Length: 73
Image 1 (tube, rainbow, N blue to C red):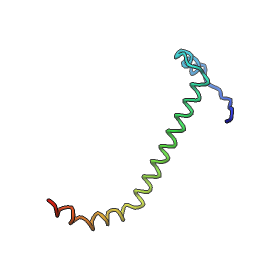
Image 2: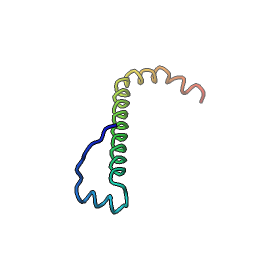
Image 3: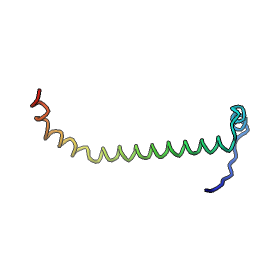
C-alpha cells in the first residue's frame, strides 16, 4: 500500500467536514469508487467492441436459424 498526498480545495474540505466524515476515509472511498467506475466503463467499452467485431457473424447465424424460429408457432 502506498500513501499519497493530495491537495483539496477549502470548499471540498468544508463539505467533507460538514458531513462529519473523516477526510482520509472519505477521500479513499471516493478514489476507490472512481477506480471501480473506470474499470466498469473500460469493460463496457471492450464488450461493445467485441459485439461490433462479431456483428456480421452473429447476423449470419441468426439468418441461418431464422426458419427454425417459426417452426414451433
